[in-house]
Image (tube, rainbow, N blue to C red; front, side):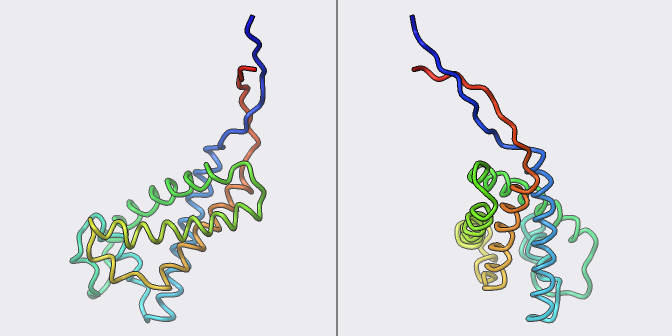
Amino acid sequence: MQRVNLRWNQIVDWRAVAVSGMASALVFLLINIILKTVYLGSPELTWRILASVIQGPEVVPPMSGLPMDMILAALAVHIPLSILFTALIAIVVHEWGMVTSVVVGGLMGLAIYAINFYGLSYFFPWMEPLASWLMMSSHIAFGAVAGGLYEAFERDIYQLEAVEA
C-alpha cells in the first residue's frame, strides 16, 4: 500500500496581482512624468515611448501636444505589461515577507528594465538610445512597489497537495 502525505501549499493571489499591478503601473507613470518634467522639461516622453510599441518610432520625437490616441495606445501597452510583470514578481515573492518582497521586486524591476531596453531593442531598435538612469530608477521603483503592494494585498490562500511519502 502506497502512503501519501498531505501538505498545504500557499498559492498566488491573482486578485492581489491585478490590484498591485494597476497601482504599480500608476506609480511608474507618476515617477516617470515627474522625473522627465524635472530633468527633461517635458512629461510627454514617457507617453511617447510607451505608445511607440503600438504606433511605431515616429511618435517618439517631440511634436506639438499629446494626442489622445497616443495616451490610449500608451495605456494599452503599459497596463497589461504592468500586470504581467507584477504576476512574475508575485510568483517569485509570494511566500516571503514584506521587506524581501520589496527588495526582490526592485531587483526584478532592474531586470525588467534590462530586458525592455536591451533585449527588446532587437524588435524596437529606437528604444535602446532612450535607456537612461531615469528609466532605470522608475523600473526599480515599479518592481519594489509591485512586490510590496502584492505582499500588502495578498490573502493567504492555500491548496491541499498530495505528496508521495
